[in-house]
Length: 114
Image (cartoon, rainbow, N blue to C red; front, top):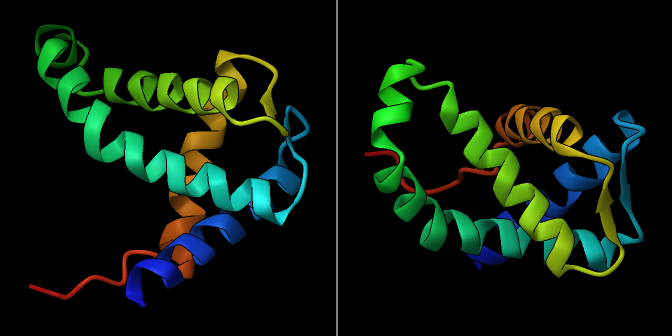
């Protein structure tokens, strides 16, 4: 039940950020739900691999390259999900930052506090 709540709140966060940014288009709530699920899946599977492969450049940029990795994953999501589009890399970068902020405000990370 907790995972379902996280996905719904993630979809709401995607819709909120879409209303803020003119360079992002989400067709409807179901598309936002798929986007939230795919972003979560990519963050669990692909992102750790990308981080491991780009450790030198991440260290060189003092961690700022992780923002670029997030933007790349958002662009990949936009390519895979019909009804979700982003106008370019910079919109994806701003989208990922705002999505993180909105997710924090909505309390999407409802996992157990350790």
